[in-house]
Image (cartoon, rainbow, N blue to C red):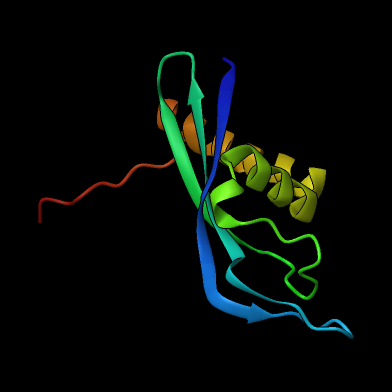
Amino acid sequence: MAITYNWDCKTLQVYTSHTDYNASPITKNNVAHAVIWELTGTNDDGVFATIVRKTILPINDLSSFQEKNDLTNEIVKGWVFKIIGPDMKAAYEAEVAHLVNEKVSPTEITVILES
């Protein structure tokens, strides 16, 4: 059964002001320094599972800084994918697929004894 993945990269941790580490320092306001993202996988029957992780953004050079109001989920998702790389992206999706499949066909259950 196919699983569809949704990467929500819209939650940012932002410094109200930050100065980078260049020879000619640049100071900007509202500098995103981390993304708290959610990855949700949903199978064809609507069974879903979600993981939440955090990816740190490089902010040592603000020369290509993008204003918070100019950011979109697609832009930030691109940053996250570049930082984590294709192997970790696949690993996170495999983790979510496992969680979805575990809901469909559990390999472990919890039982409570009567006495």
